[in-house]
Length: 152
Ligand code: 9L3
Ligand code: MG
Image (cartoon, rainbow, N blue to C red):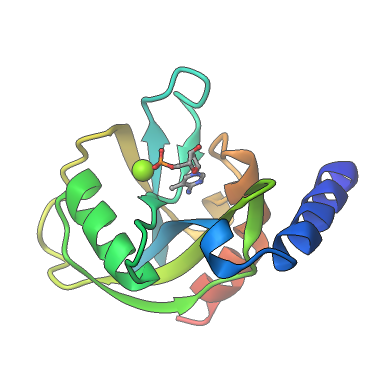
């Protein structure tokens, strides 16, 4: 794990030297409600299928992080959200790509989640955060998610 984190840090140092338009940001939503955070299981691509993530996707050119996350969560889960602060640091996904986790609040918490790309969703308490088989980058955000859950 330490080796992987170190590699991630070196990648991030490299990314810091790039211009903003040379870095692909992938936004992920920490949807928190009632002391739980929503995790979603990927169904594609095959290499990532079955592993869990905070839902989201790529920021389009010229799009803000908040607009991208709002769009992705609408497409992937059929929900409307208000986007809040970043949780944890940017995590390197590759030499020119970072994962950025943002808090997202459901505008209508009673509306059911309707996943279009994920084959399961699950609401996790802080104590359950370690249970899913998370994508590597998302796994690095867990301590920060735990803090964010404790704060509410
Ligand atoms: N990714 C990693 N963790 C996440 C998300 C939303 C995405 N929480 C990675 C998986 C893909 C890439 O970022 O390789 C782009 O994500 P998507 O557009 O396929 O969801
Ligand atoms: Mg996605």
